[in-house]
Image (cartoon, rainbow, N blue to C red; front, side, top):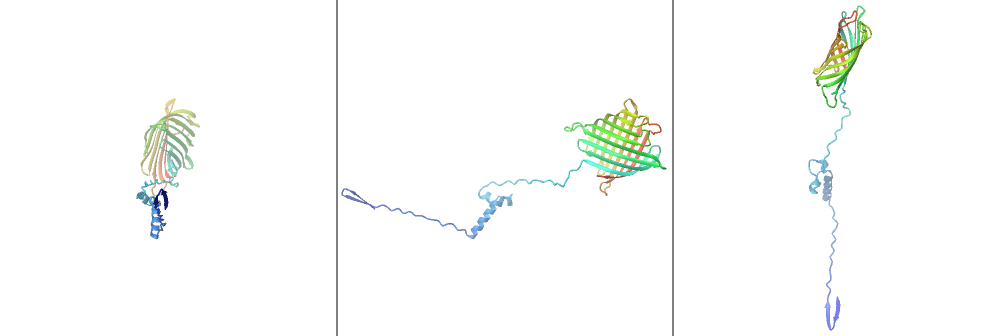
Length: 304
């Protein structure tokens, strides 16, 4: 209340009191159903995408949160699963029928190993044949061979390849007794599939005889063809023919023909039956030697 005097006139002014209302809201108290609902909402929000990746979660529907993209599972290679080795080997033992000075039978032993891939082939073998008749040695023959062939342009495969091969022979009953060979040159692949590998070759090299009519070194050419055929599962046929004339006289030549048939026994793992034939022809045989020598072998082989 306030009084003011203006002359004789008195004015009475009453101040209007201001009333301020203050409303304090009580803190909400969550009942048991509200607590359960909040916990359920929180659980669905956190685990929604993990539990049901194909369905939207509560957070995605209410808050418009984009769905999380699941990362593709990482495939872990089985450490126990090994890749197939390019190497194959076998050991064989069996009987031999030979035609040299006479027809005889005896034993044979063989070992072969090879490595094959899309670009190259490396094959090596050792064969031993022993025959006797009336306590007299008719055959005591050992031959070790190795052959390597590779495409000339590995980055751009073509039918052309280069090759190198070598061999060592010991023959107790022939006049040369020991013979070594080495050749190298170019080849052309007529087929290089998993079923058939077939190539033709031409190259130069030399042969060496320990003794006999051609003792020492003889420079020769080599023309050959080699085939490796798998006509069906469990059957393998290998063959080669080589013609090796002396450069100074083409009428002086050697011819070597080889063929091997291998049939796997399905009833026994890694065991097979093999049959081989080897024919050597020498146009200039030594004194007492035959022009032709033929060996036919039959036996069992274990592959690994």
